[in-house]
Image (cartoon, rainbow, N blue to C red; front, top):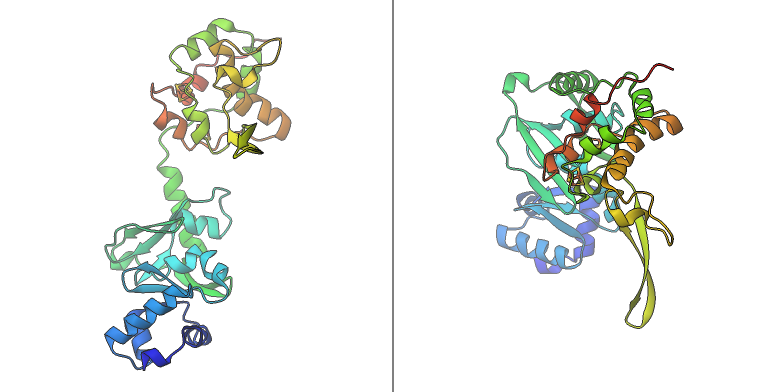
Length: 301
Ligand code: SF4
Ligand code: SF4
C-alpha cells in the first residue's frame, strides 16, 4: 500500500489537512498504514525533500513552499511538546514589545524537555507548574497556527526580566561627561591599560558593524570579500601616511565614545543594548559598566 502512494500525492494530502507538522503514528493513521510502511513512506518523502525531520518521529511538511514552515520558528516551537506556548522574550518580540530579536525561541511547558536545535533555530523549554500554565492563546502567524502567551502574560514576563537586571548604568548626562573628558589622556590610558586589543568585544557586540573589504585572487580570478573588522585593532585606521589611532587608549576611547557619545549625538540613541557580551567574553574582564561609572563629571563651562 505504502509503495503505491506517490510522495507528492501524500504531501498534497498532508497540505490539504493542514498537517504541516506531523508524527509517524499520525501519518500511519491518515493513510491506514502499519508502523514500518509508514516510516518507509516518510523516508521517501524525505528523499524527495518534501518533509524534514525535526526530532525523532516528528516531521515538518516542507512541500512545495518550504519557506512557509521554515520561516516560522514559532509554529515549530508550538509543536515540539504539548502542552506548550511560546513565552518570555519570544512572546515580547511577537507583540513588538522589544526590538531585540531573540536567538532562541523560549517555550513554556508543564513537561521537562531538553533544548532542541533544528537548522538555525534553537528552542529552549521552561518547565512551569500546572497551576501557572495559563494566559496563552492560539494565533495564526503566516497562515500557520501558533500558541503564544497573551499580552498580559508577555508584559508580566517583561516586568520579571527587568526586575532581574542587577547592573545598571546611569546614562544621565553621560554624553556630556564623555565629551568633557575626551582629551583627558590620563583617564583613557588608565581605562585602556589592561585591554589586549583582541577585538573579541567588538566581534560579539550586536551593535558593532565595522567591516573590511579585501580583493583576493581565487583560482586565478579576482574575488572581493567582506569580513568583520574592529576598531580595537591598530591597523583598523592605518592610512598611507599616518595612523590616528595607533595608541591603544585612543582606540578604547573610540569604542566607548562611539557607543555612548557619537551615536547619541548623531541618532539620539545609545549604541549599546546592554547585553553584557563584551563583559562576559573579554579575556581580561574589561568591564564597560565600570568604565562608564568612572567617567569624570563634566567640567563646568
Ligand atoms: S575583549 Fe577585552 S581585551 Fe579584547 S579588545 Fe575588548 S576590551 Fe580589549
Ligand atoms: S553590552 Fe553594549 S557594548 Fe557590550 S556587547 Fe552588548 S551592546 Fe555591545
